[in-house]
Image (cartoon, rainbow, N blue to C red):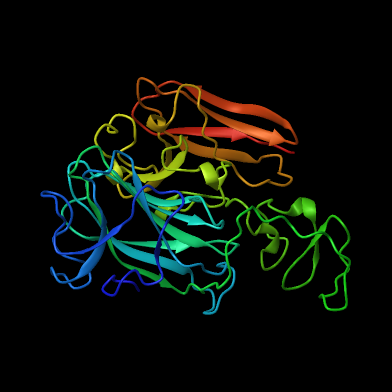
Length: 368
């Protein structure tokens, strides 16, 4: 755990994509009516923590990013099947607090996918958060604080810790890794009789037709054929995306882009009350999670896509069921598209405000 009593530990200030740095401090922040007056670790003015200064020379939406050390893929386990966990405490007090976000990246630059974000004032107290990490490649965690539109927008963090995460001593790649070229089987590889167009089950060595991958059925007893596929059911709780992803490259993926974000009703800040649902559909509470596209970060005609990995052959009754919320005078269009090869078909569409309530959508996918 890093409590910042002796410095930044294994964390570093980002030197590539942010505007300014997090500041290590004791006691209250310099500005009245914002920020904590004590740290989280010791609970007094002698303890240290990090914060972002929202006053001059910082400007609205300037960012400060803290980068963790690198960790091995979460598919590598040293303690059985326990999850790699990131825990931290945060303080967001002030009328013009903007946002605190956590990202996970597998590249040496850029932000990577968004794991968690909180907007607006959260009260004059420390809060704690636990995030469960998942990555098939070595990764880093980034903590980003964004400046609000006035001086009373300080954000603080303390007690950052990783549990059951295995350190990685190498460097993250600067470019997207490409699959290695196909090679012939050698005597050092586990022998199998699978032909081209078949995948090998990790544990049993059984052969499964490649077309059965990601079809929501476990043809491999240990589930190899359903690994890294979209989940059959996803409620987005705890900010999990269940295999859904966005197609933008991490080098241009910033919190200021028009894209899908994980959110909760309790994270709504001033100006969003009429545009975002106060409760999710799963739990019907402000604590429940959902995905939303923030139009304030986009312009007319801009598009935000949420995609699944390729889904294999589906059954004759295969349908996509979802709940949607479209409220506001300037709401655009929500579509469900199916892509096969280079051809994309629209399966469902809804345009304009549909009232301030959740509605059910159902799309027939059928056999493909």
